[in-house]
Each structure stands twice: as C-alpha cells, then as structure tokens.
Length: 162
Image 1 (cartoon, one colour):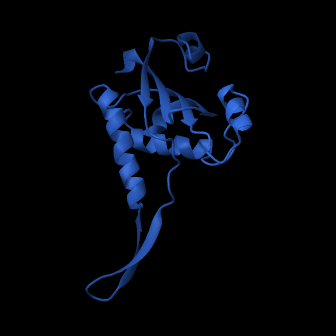
Image 2 (cartoon, rainbow, N blue to C red):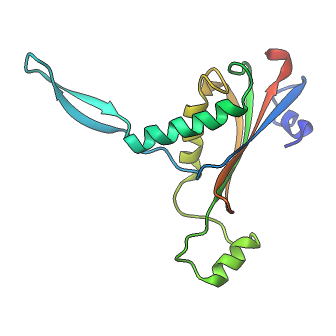
C-alpha cells in the first residue's frame, strides 16, 4: 500500500510511515480458549479459562519475531495493517494443483480463516507494535500459497503521532 493509498482510506492527511515484517512462522489461527474446573481449599469450584500450551508457545514465538524487528515501544495513533499470509500447499494435493498454486491460480480457501489469522496478529501486537488493537483503523488480509510458510506484515502509522 502506498502512502497515497493509505490516505485514500479517509483517515486524513499527515505523514505516514511504514514498517515491514517478514515472519518465518506458519500462519495459524488462534486456538479456542479452554476451560477447566478448579476447586479451592474450601471446596468451592469455579471455571478457569486458559490457552493451550501449543497456542502459548506460538504466541511467544510470533511475539519474539515481532519484537526483534519492531521499534522501541508500541506505536500511538491510527494504524493501517496490510497482512499477507503464505501457506504451504498440502502434500495431499496433486502435482497439477501444486503447479497452479505456484502460478497463483489456486488459493487456500479452507482453514485457517482470514479473520482468525487477523485476530491472532491483533492480540499478539498489543503492547508490542501498538498500544491496543483498537488503534487499527483499516486492514487488508490475504491468504495465498507460498513457500516457505510465512507472514508478511506492513504496518502504516502516523509519524506525527509518535
């Protein structure tokens, strides 16, 4: 997205800067929160929500990649996100399908859902890239086949708001 394209979003004028990230992790959607029953010493029971170990590990890895490439402290002001996720072609697909995917003629229309990929990035970016994901005023997310599996993230922000 060019600076003019960023301004076309209707956010207003100003000096937009961008940061680009290439994250060599397989794009994954956020796992559902799990639930367990916990009993206190007094015998009362309550429900406790938690993330799976697999999700916690993925979040730590993704956050580490982002921290490694990000500026000092989270960004302030409006944020525009442009996300490209590349997903490996499943080995179960035919050679013909693989060739079509390489030419950009096939798209990953199954899971993970684009909206769930976005949610994962929004949550992990909190306090690292931006103060809160409520700052995101415009977003574009795409899924395509590619190797290696990876995220490519462009973050547009207002330089005059930092």
